[in-house]
Image 1: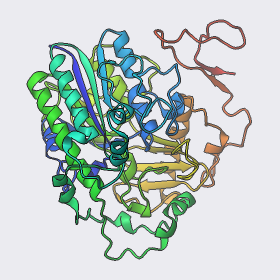
Image 2 (image 1 turned 45 degrees about the vertical axis):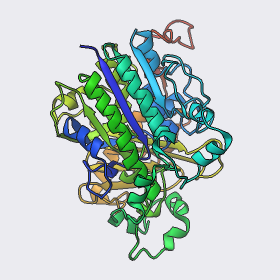
Image 3 (image 1 turned 90 degrees about the horizontal axis):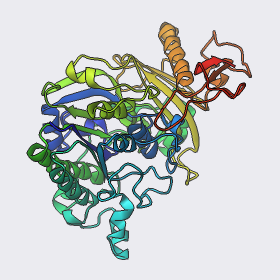
Image 4 (image 1 turned 180 degrees about the vertical axis):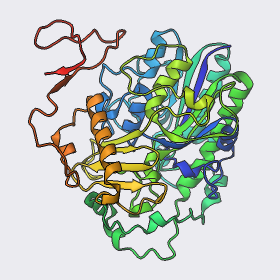
Length: 492
């Protein structure tokens, strides 16, 4: 049987915008069907909650701080090949259809197929726009434009995906279908747009968060909403909600093609990040680790492995996607990749891939001066506690079981100091292990960390060179001798 993987993703879909996670009134029958036939990861997290950095981690298997995409409109370094390139070089076909956002240009891309991906099927958003006349281009970016399904990016992506599956039914392959929807402008045919004209998303306690005791940058982000009277507030975003139901239908077309032509394929669905939808008085996404923004849907159906309708309750991360795809394709997983295949968590619904997951932030956007500018953040979640260090602002600790809406910041609560400090130590170690270029003594010396070491210009005093990636990089040399290094991590 061919080794095939189909990875479906949407943009800005919150974990609870799928009925299989939470029944809110948003209709997602096709993704719910996928969940019923596979495993639903209850606590999956993006690596950075903004478009390009999130995608860089998904498709290189390395952290945004490692691969160079720590903000939108940056491209991965040449020493970070994508999973498509790794597969193609190993003789496995790889096709990418949809939004890319990893070529360092703009939101739409440059129209050029990167190494490793099938050029005949490459279809980033610039290629879509090039199919349209000038007036159509403008209309395609205007919320409320009346469109047919065939006009939309989602429909055209699905057309190409269905064609690819039919044409490669007997071959090994990876197919990525990356929809821009439901991201704004959220254009949908009228029957979808009308569904949510007066719909209100459920209001959780997080919507009433006053941000008292929270980091300053969050209050700056909230702006005038900080003093807003939220009595009787309704959370309305008809373009986003209709876009989710419409893209669900387009995903349904691809799922039908998989069932008909590649029934043994592993199918994955996820989103790059969530959306605040007013929670914590915030909008869209950015430098926080709140579940509304950093937690994502993750569904996996692997025939013969996943138990239909199973739910994995443990933390999972996008950093594990590239190693998973490589393993499923029978391609060696490079030693230096920080993630691990999800296979143990698929074979056993109670299986756990890692003890904790990490989320970071650098900057939202290189081109724009707004969105808070540089907001360095590093966070960790172990399934019980979530610790977030905001380097230029205040820090956060939440006990998730007792406070799922993340209202009470326990960062200075002595009753939780031991758990806080243990997570902090793990976070600092992770920054060292992953060669985080922004690491330094200031991450350890937080006001609440009474046993922090003295500031040191030498930091840990260690050299941490990258581990080997034989196909793409020669073994690194020791600066002091010019000879091949013996230990990747050593005293400088």
